[in-house]
Image 1 (spheres, rainbow, N blue to C red):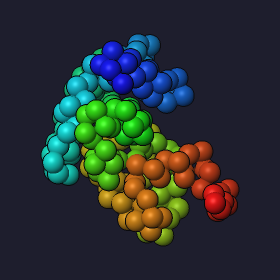
Image 2 (cartoon, rainbow, N blue to C red):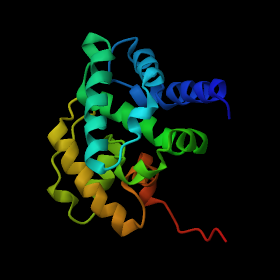
Image 3 (spheres, one colour):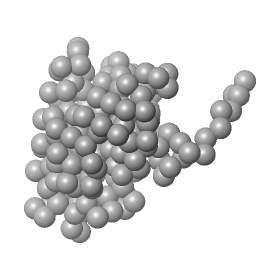
Image 4 (cartoon, rainbow, N blue to C red):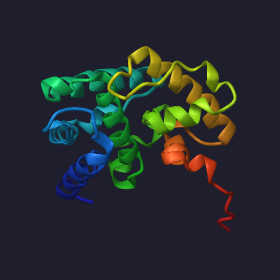
Length: 184
């Protein structure tokens, strides 16, 4: 895939990652467009790091930059982190961007995009009762996010997956309805 199409792909992922259902109640008009524009301009090469500490530094810096790019009344750390985590998950799910930027190795370091559904699902897991009370994405603080992400690592290991994928399990309570399907 050439540079023109990689750029179009980056733009598409930025636009489709953050929509009305993702950003509901997280800021004033313009929040979605501001997030999409920032994510499209985010240089994906910054993700090409060698270790988890380097990735965490990029994630924290990018969250702060995105937060500052949102409209003034929508500059919430929790919103910015959720938008960024959803976007990064979509980038890692895309083979063309992963291959071009050499970033497929960051998958184990990605966070699960945290929202009320994920927080509820994690809270219902054994040990989840010790998690901080989740109120809203916009009220989420960095310290509470870390507690949820650390616990999500434990759950993901038990599930045989990476924590970023737990969103698939907890989305709208689907973990209560899932039956194992033999894909063979």
